[in-house]
Image (cartoon, rainbow over all chains, first blue to last red; front, side):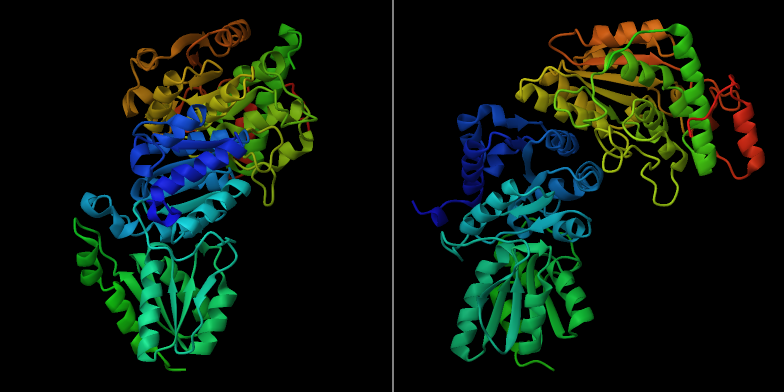
Length: 315
Length: 282
């Protein structure tokens, strides 16, 4: 089975096993959601000593991870995004980021992908609140190949990090050759009429939108940001200068996340017309992805419409 | 490294530490005096008689660790580290000054010898558990000490950590509760009752010991006994007096954080020290 036929969470667990085989200091920390994260049973089966379950106690997991990191361990802590970000925000702030302890936090089932768990579990603000934290990197890989590259980078760098992890299967954007640098956005498609900026789960859709618009004669420059922080401003500014219009799309509240980062950069360095797509400052609900895309206006058809509107934009 | 015990010298030094801590906080203009003074005998015994460490190599892998979870008591830790030679005693006079290396709450990033940054109550016992687990995974024999406050035990995260440390049989973890019966808003039994405190820790699977936190012999005996316990973490309830040795604040709620706006206030707190014939180390 090809890697892109696997669920993202299975690849997360499999890559952790690879990393543990190479470095016994890599640890897998879970808070009673290890099957949901894709690490159980494959990680405890292969590396029982490197697998630690905290029970339903996320705050303790994050601060304990800081203690482990202070001793040279490289703990990857996974739980749903709502718990990995907002529930443990002070633990991440003080034990991890302020204390500069090398903890890797993995928020699973981001945004609408929380699906049937509904509004209580649907976290739309993790990119925003984690991005506002000094000394924390924030990543959101878009497919299994990039996920593996991002995880390998995380294990090799001494950098407190938050990463979104979509649990299900995601369309392949890259192949085995993809590399990751937190300082670099990836230009997936060159274009001249409008810049489309995406991250994480939404990039697979953005690729399809850009292709279909090309057939209509709209030339989309597609920028994918696997790292929302640090944020590669130069690539964005160069593209915005060329196209004159920027559309952002993210599986998040439009406040403070990818769209926020884009507006901050452009507002200061290259004032440009921007349209942010995502969830317009509302909570989630139990619903299908299609329903939520349509309700909030950030599915493929909405992305295409926004790109058409800004194509050739007001320079 | 563990040294000889000379009671008269320890008494003299404890008075000097209390004099110094009071001066440091008064110079800074404000600070958490009460909870620093209550820990003098515990912290001095740890550094002079119990813990293994090397000031020339603060990150020595086989050292014993100390997480001061009640990070606001940092002045007593800073004094201990300066007296043991981790950094020059001159630094002590810079507590909370602009650009200081010694911030109000214990900070690993700036202070040689501090093993974990703390300040947000409730997190240190988890951090210490992680350090103890790492020691177990690496087959090390050192002890991880963790000092929590009694008021701090209001924070639910302590009890998450309590379950975790017992579940994982972290017998290389020795917690000490500075049980001075006071928190910011008053006496602990009036703000949020902890009792039956010892039984709570026992129920969570911990070995519980109690000691007079100002009695040199009891403190040394209990700390060393705790290091011998096998199969479970240890909680030592150190019965202490908040503001010990400074009559202006002893056992008073307002001892938690004093304000020293002027020379008169400075003189009031210095004059209230039980022992006066001390020399500042800077």
